[in-house]
Image 1: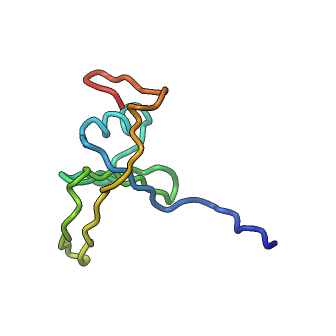
Image 2: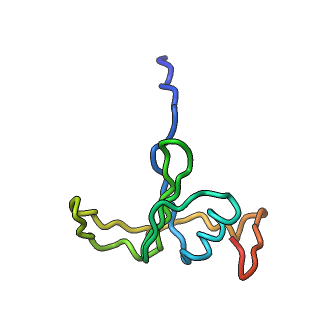
Image 3: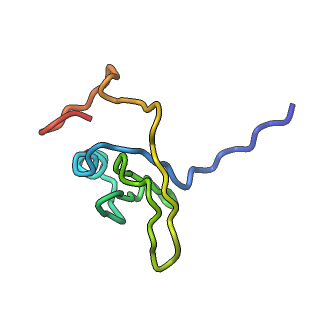
Length: 98
């Protein structure tokens, strides 16, 4: 059997959240990730050299978005999702839980 290729990194990881401000408080305030791009539907964080964490507002990405560089296709996060609040490890923060 052939050996699987070694993974040297993951360029992008996406998560969907209900509250971008609470997510920023966690990813920036707790984990210390620098937000590179912020908006009303997403934030992009510098996760590691050459790696990005994309944090999308759940339900806010269904439509295409026109940009000077081209169209960003719409996408969504409907269906099953992992809910950290059901995990035995819940991070409590002022104003809520993550």
